[in-house]
Length: 74
Image (cartoon, rainbow, N blue to C red):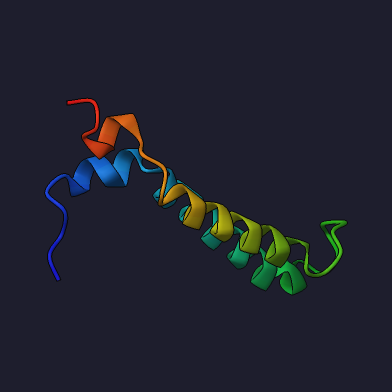
């Protein structure tokens, strides 16, 4: 496995990375929800659903050229 040449730019600017970080945070919130014992008035499964939608958005974003990192503007 070899990293792309501009991996730092990808890490900073790629929407895929941003959306996957958000999905991880939503998943962690879903896991921690029972520990909060009703402090958040959110039905079970909402954060899991949002995490799934965010992951699907990250998959779609993977195929969209992004000016700062794709190299298309050169």
